[in-house]
Amino acid sequence: MYLEVIMHSDRINKASSYIRRRIGCLKPEIGVILGSGLGEIGKRLKDRILLDFEEIPNWPRSTVKGHPGKVVFGRMGDIEAAFVQGRVHLYEGYSIDRVVFPIRVLGRLGIKILIITNAAGGLNPSFNEGDVMIITDQINFTFTNPLIDSSGIFKEEMFLDMSSIYDKRLISIAERAADRLGISFHKGVLVGVRGPVYETKAEVKMMRMLGGDAVCMSTVSEVIAGVYEGMHILGISCITNPATGLSERRLNHEEVKKTANRFSGMIGDLIEEIIKKQEWR
Image (cartoon, rainbow, N blue to C red; front, side):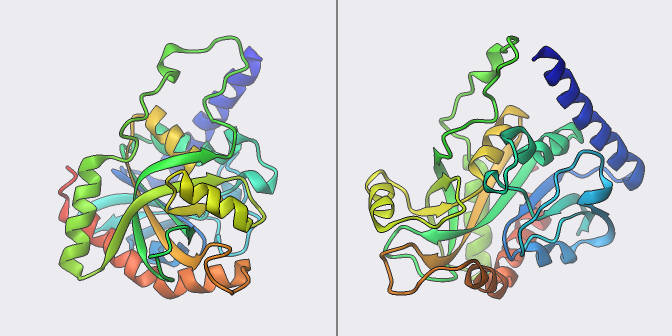
């Protein structure tokens, strides 16, 4: 088990070293994870350097449509940033270590501000298709955790305080940015599940009773890994559909992608405003 930990750390080092060689003197300050249908936002970076997931040593490959599978480095205004176009999920058969591997690599590159986006179903009956939700907290229903350690060398720092995993200052910055752009938004609690099936009516009712406002099949494990890496995290959900039982419409991934694509411009405007104003510095 100890050997597995050493090997995993070595894989992270190899990936980050390769990226450093490829991007030269570029030193990204902000990382952005782009969820289903939101990958086009990465095109807003200037002086772009594109790396395919396949070329980065040990980087997991996305198998889901709507995830382009590229890491884009470049500039947004005066800020150097890294945009990850897509992610991998537990439901693709990846281990939790592989799911959070990109977050660990971004941490090794020195990134301390992380914006995580996703396409999510609305649990809150007041949410509509295309709404923006700034995430204030989360419920982890994946029933796993990236910090679970079976190596026998558990570290005390893995006992993370989870009271403010979504950075309150970044939430305030996002609110002001949305107000300046005239983007209406909600704030709420994200429920993360394993997938790949959508939730039943009974499950949606349970999640709502427990305080959930939106549900997705990603993000929660990435956030835990980001907090462990010392990152300040902002989470933004694009509400692509009402969850099961809140409308008569049947759910499918193609419609989720189309809705996210349709509203990606608005999410991109919000991210760009947040980055360029530099209030997070």
